[in-house]
Length: 195
Image 1 (cartoon, rainbow, N blue to C red):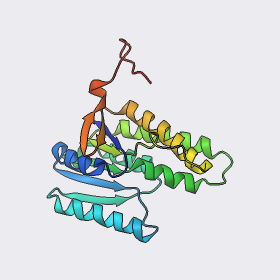
Image 2: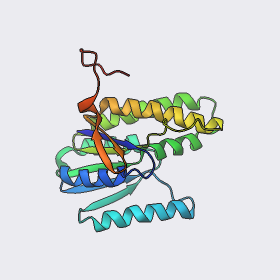
Image 3: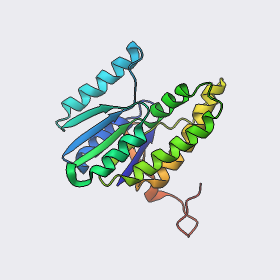
């Protein structure tokens, strides 16, 4: 079962995802995509680590800023070897940022990003154990002033839609309150959403 958890900055989405993971398994694999490139990022990483340690749920952490799809595929192949494990990826928008920076100046960067997003969605769908992916809802704010910011916003929207398609549940967390969107989604009568 694949689950997407989205929301704005500091909305409570990571905390909700961690708590939800504890209801789906007996132990967790936390895949962190953030890179500790400066003091503020390192402080955020430490806060997340402390919260997981204090939760009482057993977490194992793997840091993977770029090759997320490959790591998920490897875990999909493990199958029952790690029964009771739930996977939590935090977060997809940082993964996307990492790729945008990695591909800066590459002529076919947009094509590579689209392929990476497709591979990520396919990998999430292939995992046979519960997997929760956290992402940011970035399209509700102002239009970014710079081209890189606009590319990030646009690709984040594409990525979130693509991942949501393969997930059984999609939660929007606002002010710490999670709402499951697929249960209340509008359909055209043939099961197709209103995208």
